[in-house]
Image (tube, rainbow, N blue to C red):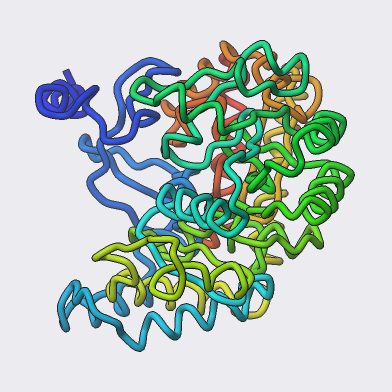
Length: 430
């Protein structure tokens, strides 16, 4: 029994399932989770001191690489003056100014500690601003684990989301809450138009991942985005871009800068904290002014704008703003995807790839999927085999076929070549 097995067995005695976030348990792929002891650049080492090339990078935030010396120094400096004050600091003003500068749609911003907190607060704000209850989300998009977002579409999908047919996708979520959430298929313009035609005046907000990363990587069609922006504007609903994953990951201005869409509210997380627990939501001043202490929409948090997290975020944003950063990151991601595709083709395995900035998706299918339903039809068994073969070769992929992957600026040519070589061996074994 290896040290990872020993730790996993021990963890299960005091932690439900042995993990503090479900995907870490390896349930979809089987086997024993790797317990990480340290990480540097594009690598981490497990409890058995085996080195892996990391392709999740803490699910996105470690865009400059693990333990980047400049970020470490900024964090150490901040930590020396205490970890938390529960009072305002100049640093959080600097971070707010930088966020507003990088994303012009964000006129004002409120900091929180997690992506779930950001989306939950943005939805409450949208409801408070519009005086309406209904929200629209899309199948396969994940926006954190707030009650009103853990909803799966029932048979009502066939008739364009009759919310009375929906069901909670988690225990502990009241049916009464679920009726306020409509779940539509991603990329389905007709469904969106139908719902707005029938219930437009009751819809408080539409929330979406502008590039989905929680059903693998799925990009939206421009017609879908255009319809969403015009319908929400026409009916006075709030368009919320959940850029917790895509913000500063796919481009310096987020997915919205690539898509030419100006959302009303944006949720941010991950990269903006450089790996520290840090997130935010922001947007039009007119909407943000409804927040307490100015308005009647309540939101608070002792650790919001935490000084150590702010220092990590500010330094990370400074590094990614340097000339050529995204051109280089994008080129490395594309090189990696092209290499994987070539290796799969050589082994005659149906395989498709996609990427945006430092975020990527690969699918055991003949073409890139455009919806959650299409993702579920990809070859999940082939993914499991590939995952374990790559793990044996020292490459750590997301332990689920429904998660996007991430690289960092530290994934240089040598690292990318090593991943492709590992994939060639893995495909041969399959």
